[in-house]
Length: 382
Image (cartoon, rainbow, N blue to C red; front, side, top):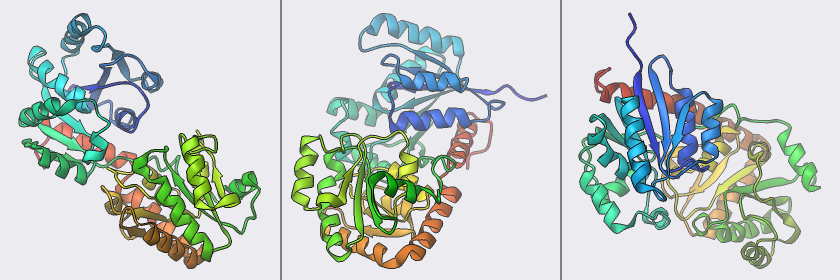
């Protein structure tokens, strides 16, 4: 007779679209429902993630502790008690803190935290405060496991004073069906931009943010373009558009002129990424860079800066340069251009094979499933 599924309550800080939230959706959609029964809850009201969960047949609720801390706090306790989870998995700092105090009120389920920050730059945008971080560091010995999505994140939190009983580094998983090589993507991209099919396209995918260092990317691309007349430079992401006054200044100062194409946010980013000849991550700070993994899954060779887990993700399938060095970045782009179409295609094929073998969504789900089975006592610790 088969045993009952392990009940897991995923406590998310919010239901807005973000990297952590999308990984949560991918995880609960991928877990074997004969082994795991999941309920997902948001602490800060509704959001588009809730609809995605509903489409996947995953139960979800939202409360709003920021507006109704007493009444919604009591409702949270009632909902969790009714579900009777065996594992309470929290996502991001605020949820980690709430889950730690919720646990004794709902029957002491096994607790797992999930960390996504990997350095102080990323932390600067998190409204948890020094007191909250110190409290979390002190409480970190209580969870059965603390999950980080990057080795750099694990090391960073060790420096903050985290001392869990068990670390689990589980990298993000990439959708290798959505992000895949597309032989016609380059032709469609160049046609859309009115360019010759013989151009060499180098692009950056990511929102306009000082940490992404678009300024450094544009300087590097301008240097590389001096040696490669066929080079065309493409920017994709929120705020990466000519009407953005910050980027307009950067674009003017770069001197790239008509070589530069700023496409802004695109829902079909996978088709654009697959049309690049070279993808670049010029970040001065990263954790686990999704845009790099997505480009690799599309079979596009990458040049990345040596921050966070970028080099670990890329392996031998591209070029790694120091952060904040446009000259080194330009030289690496030039190396990629010099490889020629066949050389880049071979490197891109290796990059995709690496993502499929080590960083796909099914592998991410499998790693979480193994962890949940172990901390629930359903499988021996490994």
